[in-house]
Length: 419
Image 1 (tube, rainbow, N blue to C red):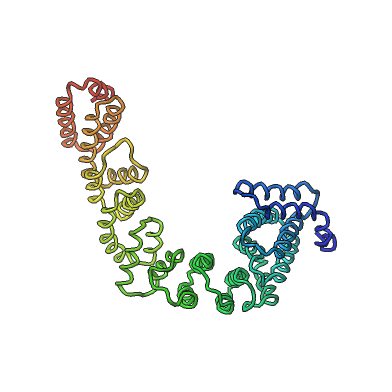
Image 2: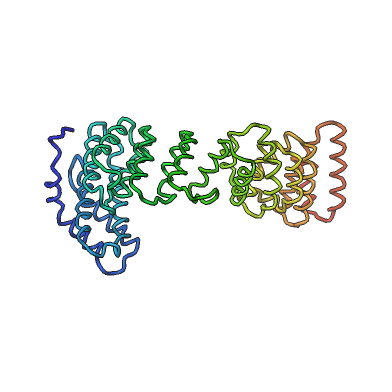
Protein backbone atom coordinates (compact mmCIF):
# COMPACT_ATOMS: atom_id res chain seq x y z
CA UNK A 1 0.00 0.00 0.00
CA UNK A 2 1.50 3.30 -1.08
CA UNK A 3 1.39 6.11 1.46
CA UNK A 4 0.40 8.60 -1.27
CA UNK A 5 -2.68 6.54 -2.14
CA UNK A 6 -4.17 6.82 1.36
CA UNK A 7 -6.69 9.59 1.66
CA UNK A 8 -6.08 12.52 3.93
CA UNK A 9 -8.14 12.44 7.09
CA UNK A 10 -9.92 15.66 6.12
CA UNK A 11 -11.26 13.96 2.97
CA UNK A 12 -12.42 10.95 4.93
CA UNK A 13 -14.07 13.19 7.52
CA UNK A 14 -16.06 14.98 4.82
CA UNK A 15 -17.39 11.64 3.60
CA UNK A 16 -18.64 10.54 7.01
CA UNK A 17 -19.34 13.86 8.74
CA UNK A 18 -23.10 13.36 8.72
CA UNK A 19 -23.02 9.90 10.38
CA UNK A 20 -20.52 11.24 12.93
CA UNK A 21 -22.91 14.07 13.81
CA UNK A 22 -25.83 11.65 14.15
CA UNK A 23 -23.81 9.35 16.44
CA UNK A 24 -22.71 12.28 18.60
CA UNK A 25 -26.27 13.56 18.95
CA UNK A 26 -27.52 10.08 19.77
CA UNK A 27 -24.88 9.58 22.48
CA UNK A 28 -25.64 12.94 24.09
CA UNK A 29 -29.43 12.62 23.91
CA UNK A 30 -31.07 13.24 27.27
CA UNK A 31 -33.18 10.06 27.17
CA UNK A 32 -32.34 7.00 29.26
CA UNK A 33 -29.82 4.74 27.51
CA UNK A 34 -29.20 1.06 28.25
CA UNK A 35 -26.20 -1.04 27.26
CA UNK A 36 -28.33 -2.49 24.48
CA UNK A 37 -28.84 1.00 23.10
CA UNK A 38 -25.10 1.69 23.32
CA UNK A 39 -24.36 -1.54 21.49
CA UNK A 40 -26.73 -0.50 18.71
CA UNK A 41 -25.12 2.97 18.45
CA UNK A 42 -21.76 1.32 17.97
CA UNK A 43 -23.05 -1.21 15.45
CA UNK A 44 -24.67 1.55 13.44
CA UNK A 45 -21.41 3.49 13.33
CA UNK A 46 -19.40 0.43 12.29
CA UNK A 47 -21.93 -0.39 9.57
CA UNK A 48 -21.42 3.10 8.13
CA UNK A 49 -17.81 2.06 7.48
CA UNK A 50 -18.31 -1.57 6.51
CA UNK A 51 -20.80 -0.53 3.82
CA UNK A 52 -18.11 1.52 2.10
CA UNK A 53 -15.65 0.17 -0.44
CA UNK A 54 -12.19 0.96 0.91
CA UNK A 55 -8.80 -0.70 1.34
CA UNK A 56 -8.26 0.98 4.68
CA UNK A 57 -11.38 0.75 6.87
CA UNK A 58 -9.18 1.41 9.91
CA UNK A 59 -8.68 5.00 8.68
CA UNK A 60 -12.42 5.57 8.48
CA UNK A 61 -12.89 4.07 11.94
CA UNK A 62 -10.12 6.23 13.42
CA UNK A 63 -11.64 9.28 11.77
CA UNK A 64 -15.11 8.38 13.01
CA UNK A 65 -13.87 7.96 16.56
CA UNK A 66 -11.86 11.16 16.29
CA UNK A 67 -14.84 13.10 14.96
CA UNK A 68 -17.02 12.05 17.88
CA UNK A 69 -14.19 12.79 20.33
CA UNK A 70 -13.53 16.29 18.93
CA UNK A 71 -17.21 17.19 19.35
CA UNK A 72 -17.27 15.80 22.89
CA UNK A 73 -14.53 18.27 23.85
CA UNK A 74 -16.94 21.16 23.39
CA UNK A 75 -19.67 20.04 25.76
CA UNK A 76 -19.64 21.24 29.36
CA UNK A 77 -21.48 18.26 30.84
CA UNK A 78 -19.20 15.48 29.55
CA UNK A 79 -19.40 13.53 32.81
CA UNK A 80 -23.12 12.93 32.27
CA UNK A 81 -22.31 10.99 29.09
CA UNK A 82 -18.88 9.59 29.95
CA UNK A 83 -20.12 6.01 30.23
CA UNK A 84 -21.71 6.24 26.80
CA UNK A 85 -18.62 7.69 25.13
CA UNK A 86 -16.40 5.10 26.79
CA UNK A 87 -18.61 2.25 25.59
CA UNK A 88 -18.62 3.66 22.05
CA UNK A 89 -14.82 4.08 21.97
CA UNK A 90 -14.27 0.52 23.26
CA UNK A 91 -16.57 -0.90 20.59
CA UNK A 92 -14.86 0.96 17.76
CA UNK A 93 -11.45 0.09 19.19
CA UNK A 94 -12.32 -3.61 19.08
CA UNK A 95 -13.42 -3.24 15.46
CA UNK A 96 -10.19 -1.41 14.56
CA UNK A 97 -8.09 -4.16 16.16
CA UNK A 98 -9.99 -6.76 14.16
CA UNK A 99 -9.39 -4.77 10.95
CA UNK A 100 -5.63 -4.36 11.42
CA UNK A 101 -4.59 -7.68 12.99
CA UNK A 102 -3.89 -9.27 9.60
CA UNK A 103 -2.28 -6.26 7.89
CA UNK A 104 1.17 -6.69 6.42
CA UNK A 105 4.09 -4.82 7.96
CA UNK A 106 3.97 -1.69 5.81
CA UNK A 107 0.25 -0.87 6.01
CA UNK A 108 0.33 -1.77 9.69
CA UNK A 109 3.11 0.80 10.21
CA UNK A 110 0.98 3.41 8.43
CA UNK A 111 -1.89 2.66 10.78
CA UNK A 112 0.37 2.82 13.83
CA UNK A 113 1.79 6.18 12.72
CA UNK A 114 -1.73 7.61 12.38
CA UNK A 115 -2.61 6.39 15.85
CA UNK A 116 0.62 7.70 17.37
CA UNK A 117 0.02 11.09 15.76
CA UNK A 118 -3.42 11.28 17.37
CA UNK A 119 -2.04 10.09 20.70
CA UNK A 120 0.58 12.84 20.68
CA UNK A 121 -1.87 15.52 19.50
CA UNK A 122 -4.30 14.82 22.33
CA UNK A 123 -1.77 13.64 24.90
CA UNK A 124 -2.89 16.13 27.55
CA UNK A 125 -6.62 15.46 27.18
CA UNK A 126 -8.02 13.17 29.87
CA UNK A 127 -10.78 11.54 27.81
CA UNK A 128 -8.93 10.98 24.55
CA UNK A 129 -9.57 7.37 23.39
CA UNK A 130 -6.19 6.81 21.72
CA UNK A 131 -4.06 5.57 24.65
CA UNK A 132 -6.69 2.96 25.54
CA UNK A 133 -6.71 1.76 21.93
CA UNK A 134 -2.91 1.62 21.96
CA UNK A 135 -2.90 -0.39 25.20
CA UNK A 136 -5.35 -2.86 23.67
CA UNK A 137 -3.11 -3.25 20.63
CA UNK A 138 0.21 -3.65 22.41
CA UNK A 139 0.00 -7.21 23.82
CA UNK A 140 -0.43 -8.65 20.30
CA UNK A 141 1.57 -6.03 18.40
CA UNK A 142 4.34 -7.54 16.22
CA UNK A 143 7.70 -7.12 17.95
CA UNK A 144 9.12 -5.31 14.91
CA UNK A 145 6.91 -2.29 15.70
CA UNK A 146 7.46 -2.01 19.46
CA UNK A 147 10.70 -0.02 19.35
CA UNK A 148 9.22 2.31 16.72
CA UNK A 149 6.25 3.03 18.98
CA UNK A 150 8.56 3.60 21.94
CA UNK A 151 10.84 5.98 20.03
CA UNK A 152 7.89 7.87 18.56
CA UNK A 153 6.21 8.43 21.93
CA UNK A 154 9.53 9.31 23.59
CA UNK A 155 9.96 12.20 21.16
CA UNK A 156 6.35 13.40 21.04
CA UNK A 157 4.94 13.35 24.60
CA UNK A 158 5.91 14.87 27.92
CA UNK A 159 5.31 12.42 30.75
CA UNK A 160 4.97 15.26 33.25
CA UNK A 161 2.19 16.96 31.27
CA UNK A 162 0.41 14.13 29.47
CA UNK A 163 -2.76 12.48 30.71
CA UNK A 164 -2.64 9.55 33.08
CA UNK A 165 -3.78 7.12 30.37
CA UNK A 166 -1.03 8.26 27.99
CA UNK A 167 1.57 7.83 30.73
CA UNK A 168 0.31 4.29 31.35
CA UNK A 169 0.45 3.42 27.65
CA UNK A 170 3.94 4.89 27.24
CA UNK A 171 5.16 3.09 30.35
CA UNK A 172 3.85 -0.24 29.03
CA UNK A 173 5.50 0.31 25.65
CA UNK A 174 8.77 1.09 27.41
CA UNK A 175 8.54 -2.17 29.36
CA UNK A 176 7.91 -4.11 26.15
CA UNK A 177 10.95 -2.42 24.62
CA UNK A 178 13.08 -3.42 27.61
CA UNK A 179 13.40 0.15 28.93
CA UNK A 180 12.49 -0.50 32.55
CA UNK A 181 13.89 2.74 33.94
CA UNK A 182 11.96 4.79 31.37
CA UNK A 183 8.85 2.79 32.14
CA UNK A 184 8.77 3.58 35.85
CA UNK A 185 10.26 7.03 35.28
CA UNK A 186 7.35 8.10 33.08
CA UNK A 187 4.86 7.15 35.78
CA UNK A 188 6.86 9.00 38.42
CA UNK A 189 7.06 12.14 36.28
CA UNK A 190 3.35 12.02 35.59
CA UNK A 191 2.70 12.34 39.30
CA UNK A 192 -0.72 10.67 39.21
CA UNK A 193 -1.92 8.37 41.97
CA UNK A 194 -2.20 5.19 39.95
CA UNK A 195 -4.62 2.50 41.08
CA UNK A 196 -3.57 -1.12 41.29
CA UNK A 197 -5.79 -2.25 38.41
CA UNK A 198 -4.35 0.43 36.11
CA UNK A 199 -0.84 -1.04 36.32
CA UNK A 200 -1.89 -4.69 36.41
CA UNK A 201 -0.77 -5.22 32.75
CA UNK A 202 2.65 -3.82 33.66
CA UNK A 203 3.02 -6.17 36.62
CA UNK A 204 1.81 -9.09 34.53
CA UNK A 205 4.62 -8.36 32.06
CA UNK A 206 7.19 -8.11 34.85
CA UNK A 207 5.92 -11.41 36.23
CA UNK A 208 6.06 -13.10 32.81
CA UNK A 209 9.68 -11.97 32.48
CA UNK A 210 10.53 -12.98 36.06
CA UNK A 211 11.67 -9.42 36.82
CA UNK A 212 11.09 -9.79 40.55
CA UNK A 213 13.61 -7.22 41.75
CA UNK A 214 12.18 -4.67 39.30
CA UNK A 215 8.69 -5.50 40.54
CA UNK A 216 9.78 -4.83 44.11
CA UNK A 217 11.14 -1.43 43.05
CA UNK A 218 7.88 -0.58 41.28
CA UNK A 219 5.89 -1.38 44.39
CA UNK A 220 8.04 0.89 46.53
CA UNK A 221 7.76 3.72 43.99
CA UNK A 222 4.06 3.49 43.12
CA UNK A 223 2.64 2.32 46.45
CA UNK A 224 5.12 3.38 49.15
CA UNK A 225 2.54 3.39 51.95
CA UNK A 226 0.88 0.07 51.28
CA UNK A 227 1.53 -2.93 53.47
CA UNK A 228 1.63 -6.60 52.58
CA UNK A 229 -1.86 -7.88 51.90
CA UNK A 230 -3.16 -4.49 50.72
CA UNK A 231 -2.28 -4.58 47.02
CA UNK A 232 -5.68 -5.47 45.59
CA UNK A 233 -5.42 -6.85 42.05
CA UNK A 234 -1.62 -6.84 42.35
CA UNK A 235 -1.55 -9.04 45.45
CA UNK A 236 -1.13 -12.27 43.46
CA UNK A 237 2.02 -10.84 41.84
CA UNK A 238 3.33 -9.61 45.19
CA UNK A 239 2.78 -13.01 46.78
CA UNK A 240 4.56 -14.81 43.94
CA UNK A 241 7.41 -12.31 44.13
CA UNK A 242 7.75 -13.01 47.84
CA UNK A 243 7.87 -16.76 47.26
CA UNK A 244 10.88 -16.19 44.99
CA UNK A 245 12.77 -13.52 46.90
CA UNK A 246 14.09 -14.14 50.43
CA UNK A 247 11.59 -13.01 53.08
CA UNK A 248 10.94 -13.89 56.69
CA UNK A 249 9.03 -17.01 57.69
CA UNK A 250 6.35 -14.74 59.15
CA UNK A 251 5.79 -13.11 55.74
CA UNK A 252 5.73 -16.54 54.05
CA UNK A 253 3.10 -17.61 56.58
CA UNK A 254 1.01 -14.55 55.69
CA UNK A 255 1.18 -15.37 51.97
CA UNK A 256 -0.29 -18.82 52.51
CA UNK A 257 -2.89 -17.51 54.95
CA UNK A 258 -4.11 -15.19 52.17
CA UNK A 259 -4.02 -18.07 49.69
CA UNK A 260 -6.20 -20.14 52.03
CA UNK A 261 -8.87 -17.43 51.89
CA UNK A 262 -9.33 -18.31 48.21
CA UNK A 263 -7.53 -21.59 47.49
CA UNK A 264 -6.57 -22.26 43.90
CA UNK A 265 -4.37 -25.09 42.63
CA UNK A 266 -2.83 -23.13 39.78
CA UNK A 267 -1.65 -20.40 42.15
CA UNK A 268 -0.39 -23.11 44.50
CA UNK A 269 1.76 -24.48 41.66
CA UNK A 270 2.98 -20.99 40.79
CA UNK A 271 3.91 -20.10 44.36
CA UNK A 272 5.66 -23.42 45.02
CA UNK A 273 7.54 -23.62 41.70
CA UNK A 274 10.51 -21.82 43.29
CA UNK A 275 10.60 -24.01 46.42
CA UNK A 276 12.71 -27.10 47.07
CA UNK A 277 11.04 -30.51 47.34
CA UNK A 278 11.58 -30.51 51.09
CA UNK A 279 10.04 -27.05 51.45
CA UNK A 280 7.05 -28.13 49.39
CA UNK A 281 6.42 -31.24 51.52
CA UNK A 282 6.61 -29.15 54.69
CA UNK A 283 4.15 -26.66 53.22
CA UNK A 284 1.75 -29.39 52.09
CA UNK A 285 1.74 -30.87 55.58
CA UNK A 286 0.73 -27.46 56.89
CA UNK A 287 -1.98 -26.46 54.41
CA UNK A 288 -3.82 -29.76 53.85
CA UNK A 289 -5.36 -29.74 57.35
CA UNK A 290 -6.36 -26.11 56.77
CA UNK A 291 -7.96 -27.01 53.42
CA UNK A 292 -9.80 -29.88 55.06
CA UNK A 293 -11.61 -27.34 57.21
CA UNK A 294 -12.83 -25.66 54.00
CA UNK A 295 -14.08 -28.69 52.06
CA UNK A 296 -17.57 -27.18 51.96
CA UNK A 297 -16.11 -24.76 49.37
CA UNK A 298 -15.96 -26.48 45.97
CA UNK A 299 -12.72 -24.79 44.89
CA UNK A 300 -11.06 -25.67 48.20
CA UNK A 301 -12.15 -29.31 47.81
CA UNK A 302 -10.82 -29.47 44.26
CA UNK A 303 -7.53 -27.95 45.37
CA UNK A 304 -7.29 -30.43 48.26
CA UNK A 305 -7.84 -33.36 45.89
CA UNK A 306 -5.27 -32.12 43.39
CA UNK A 307 -2.60 -31.54 46.04
CA UNK A 308 -3.22 -34.94 47.63
CA UNK A 309 -2.83 -36.53 44.20
CA UNK A 310 0.24 -34.50 43.19
CA UNK A 311 2.10 -35.35 46.39
CA UNK A 312 0.79 -38.94 46.53
CA UNK A 313 -0.72 -38.58 49.97
CA UNK A 314 -2.66 -41.81 49.52
CA UNK A 315 -3.44 -42.49 53.18
CA UNK A 316 -4.99 -39.04 53.39
CA UNK A 317 -6.86 -39.77 50.15
CA UNK A 318 -8.36 -42.96 51.61
CA UNK A 319 -9.44 -41.19 54.78
CA UNK A 320 -10.89 -38.37 52.67
CA UNK A 321 -13.13 -40.73 50.67
CA UNK A 322 -14.23 -42.71 53.70
CA UNK A 323 -15.04 -39.63 55.75
CA UNK A 324 -16.47 -37.19 53.24
CA UNK A 325 -17.78 -38.94 50.13
CA UNK A 326 -21.54 -39.20 50.52
CA UNK A 327 -22.68 -39.76 46.92
CA UNK A 328 -20.47 -42.11 44.87
CA UNK A 329 -22.71 -41.60 41.80
CA UNK A 330 -21.84 -37.91 41.44
CA UNK A 331 -18.10 -37.64 41.91
CA UNK A 332 -16.26 -34.82 40.18
CA UNK A 333 -13.48 -35.46 37.70
CA UNK A 334 -10.84 -34.53 40.30
CA UNK A 335 -12.19 -37.15 42.73
CA UNK A 336 -12.37 -39.84 40.08
CA UNK A 337 -8.78 -39.11 39.07
CA UNK A 338 -7.67 -39.38 42.70
CA UNK A 339 -9.56 -42.66 43.16
CA UNK A 340 -7.99 -44.18 40.04
CA UNK A 341 -4.52 -43.21 41.28
CA UNK A 342 -5.26 -44.64 44.71
CA UNK A 343 -6.41 -47.95 43.20
CA UNK A 344 -3.22 -48.20 41.18
CA UNK A 345 -0.79 -47.26 43.93
CA UNK A 346 -2.47 -48.62 47.07
CA UNK A 347 -5.23 -51.14 46.29
CA UNK A 348 -5.23 -52.11 49.97
CA UNK A 349 -6.39 -48.58 50.83
CA UNK A 350 -8.92 -48.47 47.99
CA UNK A 351 -10.80 -51.64 49.02
CA UNK A 352 -12.53 -50.19 52.14
CA UNK A 353 -13.68 -47.23 50.01
CA UNK A 354 -15.38 -49.55 47.53
CA UNK A 355 -16.91 -51.57 50.37
CA UNK A 356 -18.44 -48.39 51.74
CA UNK A 357 -19.60 -47.15 48.33
CA UNK A 358 -21.35 -50.47 47.59
CA UNK A 359 -23.24 -50.58 50.87
CA UNK A 360 -24.34 -46.95 50.62
CA UNK A 361 -25.61 -47.47 47.09
CA UNK A 362 -27.52 -50.65 47.87
CA UNK A 363 -29.18 -48.96 50.84
CA UNK A 364 -30.71 -46.38 48.48
CA UNK A 365 -32.96 -49.17 47.13
CA UNK A 366 -33.32 -48.15 43.50
CA UNK A 367 -32.47 -49.92 40.25
CA UNK A 368 -30.03 -47.14 39.23
CA UNK A 369 -28.13 -47.44 42.49
CA UNK A 370 -28.09 -51.24 42.32
CA UNK A 371 -26.51 -51.00 38.88
CA UNK A 372 -23.85 -48.62 40.15
CA UNK A 373 -23.20 -50.83 43.19
CA UNK A 374 -22.70 -53.85 40.92
CA UNK A 375 -20.34 -51.83 38.76
CA UNK A 376 -18.27 -50.86 41.81
CA UNK A 377 -18.30 -54.48 42.98
CA UNK A 378 -16.85 -55.50 39.62
CA UNK A 379 -14.09 -52.86 40.04
CA UNK A 380 -13.48 -54.06 43.59
CA UNK A 381 -12.94 -57.61 42.34
CA UNK A 382 -9.93 -56.39 40.33
CA UNK A 383 -8.31 -55.13 43.54
CA UNK A 384 -8.08 -58.65 44.94
CA UNK A 385 -5.26 -60.17 42.89
CA UNK A 386 -3.68 -63.12 44.76
CA UNK A 387 -5.40 -66.45 45.32
CA UNK A 388 -5.75 -65.73 49.01
CA UNK A 389 -7.24 -62.30 48.29
CA UNK A 390 -9.73 -63.76 45.80
CA UNK A 391 -11.02 -66.06 48.51
CA UNK A 392 -11.51 -63.04 50.75
CA UNK A 393 -13.40 -61.28 47.98
CA UNK A 394 -15.78 -64.23 47.36
CA UNK A 395 -16.47 -64.45 51.09
CA UNK A 396 -17.32 -60.74 51.02
CA UNK A 397 -19.73 -61.30 48.14
CA UNK A 398 -21.43 -64.17 50.01
CA UNK A 399 -21.94 -61.97 53.06
CA UNK A 400 -23.28 -59.20 50.82
CA UNK A 401 -25.80 -61.56 49.18
CA UNK A 402 -26.91 -62.85 52.55
CA UNK A 403 -27.30 -59.34 53.98
CA UNK A 404 -29.37 -58.15 51.00
CA UNK A 405 -31.08 -61.39 49.99
CA UNK A 406 -34.48 -59.67 49.96
CA UNK A 407 -33.24 -57.01 47.52
CA UNK A 408 -34.20 -58.97 44.42
CA UNK A 409 -33.19 -56.32 41.87
CA UNK A 410 -29.74 -56.06 43.44
CA UNK A 411 -29.31 -59.87 43.43
CA UNK A 412 -30.22 -59.83 39.73
CA UNK A 413 -27.52 -57.25 39.08
CA UNK A 414 -24.95 -59.50 40.79
CA UNK A 415 -26.01 -62.41 38.59
CA UNK A 416 -25.62 -60.19 35.55
CA UNK A 417 -21.91 -59.69 36.36
CA UNK A 418 -21.49 -63.39 37.24
CA UNK A 419 -21.19 -62.95 41.00
